[in-house]
Length: 177
Image (cartoon, rainbow, N blue to C red; front, side):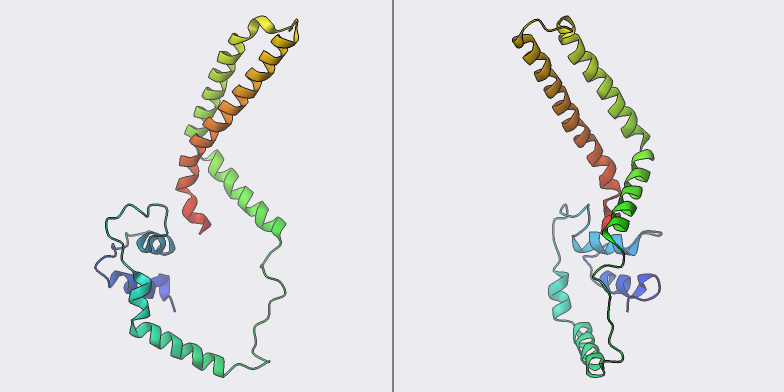
């Protein structure tokens, strides 16, 4: 039992000196993942505490195993939980919800959008001015130059867009746990 507002989980993890205290208003699930080293800000701590090892040698584990045995002993066909499918919704519904959330994050990030548009315009001007004399290629070599410049411009924009979006989605990463 996690308790009201995950109070039991918070109390359990804060019992260890290595655990940071949860901040007011912080999401308990995000705090727990960050505390045990699974969050997006994990990996920077000097010492890593073995929460799994501590749990394996705790009275709480023994109590939980006993409770599981009690519950399994009373299992019958009438109280068996059966699911129609592996997932609660279809793949299409799940994908649509993830795309909706990504769109919300995207449009709530004006600094990313402005930066991306400025970089696109600058790159277009730079590559456009390099080949302004080849508007009407007269031979195969000029045509190859134009195609290669389009390829390089697309590659450059793709890599720069990927690098700038990482910061935006890192802020929302914990949502996907």
